[in-house]
Image 1 (spheres, chains in turn blue, yellow):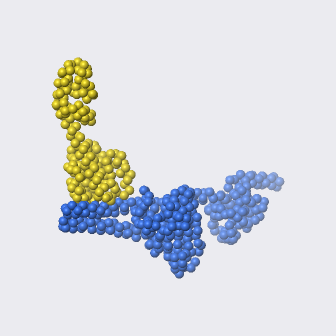
Image 2: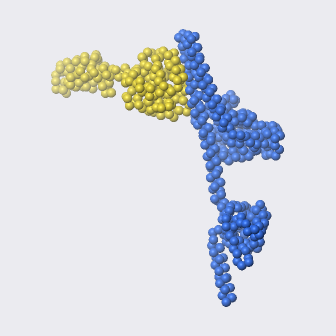
Image 3: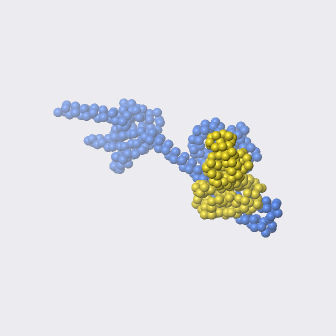
Length: 376
Length: 203
């Protein structure tokens, strides 16, 4: 009964179509040439094509150029070798909407063989949101790691401060006592010699502590790589912008493109610039205007400048400010700029502070380029 | 510099800091004794010691704050000057709140340190004199008869003999006799002095 069988088949097709359109995921069917035969409602919504206009076109229309050229050959290879790359496996790939925008999807492919015709069913799920939240999480983790790193530095600095304070206290106290005893004629040469000896011992002790810290810093310093300074600044800005937004301190970025490369430890250089940005925000408070600038002073020298419109640094303090334990904050360790200076020095560079045209401060980090070693 | 006879007990785990402090105290003609840990001082401690403590707040083992609490439990009356290091300010504030008389941050100036030590010694000597007087007053008070104590209380309260006599239902002459004995036994010549001594009895 051909009639009834035809009827049954069209009924099955209608049921199939209803099922397809009810599906939440985009579903499409292609033939062995890659031509689209079926395109469900969810697919229409996802890609922005109507079923009638896309059916008959090659499925590569839905892929970014990078993949679309290769798709036909993938399909051909499977048909000739039977080697499965995606069928029955499912993977994350990129898809392209009608408007040309590319987005991540999870694609699973199944094969349907009816008689001689081979068809492939693709089920596509938009994973942009999942990707975005993964990305956000990863960035947060990175930020956290960075903060932890700076935090550890702060703790270490506090520990160092305490340790060095002991011999310094002893030296100062010995000196005060000796002067008092001398002024009241209760100190003879033998005794003075003894006290001076003790003071010298304590000074050496302080020196040993500093030597230990130097060793530590040497061991912890990872190698430098050939880097693009602007790329490092991009990374730094990602971290700094959280802080900047929180304090309503916009950062104007003026980076000179195409700077010569330099041998840099990107994490350390990030630390230096981040520290400068944070100092500027702390000095100027909410609403501070910041500028981050990069340029090449010559073929040999790169410059990073952090400028603010805060209170500025008085001329008398422009050297002292880089000394260890110098701080204007009650909760500061006074180690930030001192460590920054060591980092910059280990790169063969220098750091200095000047008055900005706006009256604020401009911190200038000068770093040597990898002169003639690379031309990119 | 006034002579209080008190000893400065230096408790610091750092030998050089300890040694230099004792030299500085010596330069100001102050007697000192050094201890390398809170426990070492606790072992040495005896009630009735006079002087003050120069105590490092941060030490391995028992901390300066813990020693303070222990001394509190012993009813020790020694004033404490805490020596604090870099970044110990919150700890020092806590110590102040809990009754330390002072704290000083390392590295310190000699004038500042000696001035504070001197203040602590004087304050402790003053307290000690007050306590000695209070003991004496209490001992004298113990020798009064119940009647004499009653009369003393009325006198201190500012009542005249006539009122006291009426109140206690005795003759004015008897009041006068009791009153004379009270003054004699308490070792005072005026009512004003008696009132001052009576204030020690309340403590």
